[in-house]
Length: 333
Image: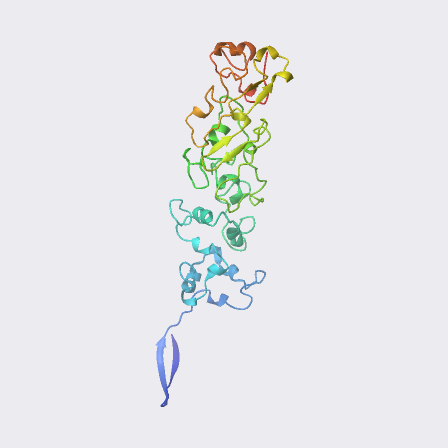
């Protein structure tokens, strides 16, 4: 126990009174770690840097003075002035169902992982004394791996929706749409590569990857742009236009060694405008992207297609070799 003597000095315009209170017994226990607030407390290279006092990343002692959410408390000094992400560290930080889940916090600050690396280190392995993020984020690049924000968190090879950046897995959501229909188990052609619709970033912080736009930019690649007119995407109605893949093609008679197949100066597709988030099978049904037969082609029955386009389609109109369909050329004989 400690003995403390207090002197109260009361001043007024009339008199001066000094009151002495002696022999008051009390045990005074300063908040744990308060001694950290000394010289060089803000210098990272110093042994007195406050971050080094957080043993095993425990910030409970900080809450004694700076409040449970680190906004200032009795100390009147907010930790958020330097550590914008510190108040996410609650008991629900690793609970995906909670609004305080760290993933939701990061999404709300537009995926600014610098708020995490500030304490957890540039490689997220723990920094000075913080816990490592890489125990959960086991894939290469840790939290910066592609499938952290979109795709399958458990499978680093699946980096596309379903599971969009907002967590959606519904194809009617434009963030999900027909990604899987283009990238997985495609029946009528080879799978589409990501760079046919997007500029694929080399790393998480590549220019243009994380920005202030609400949607991923659509930048059509060489193959999808190989038609006679340039493709485009409408973010209002979610329609693709002028893509080679959906019938923006023409094959001129003058350039063909099989001119007998032409009834016009060229054979053209329907230049179909698929709706990205309508995934019901209608967007790529046979006869959608080109007529049967295509415009400018001699009349023929569906069962006859396989006669000239050997190995591409059977007499029932089923594609039997998807590498020879929607591949940028006409496969004949």
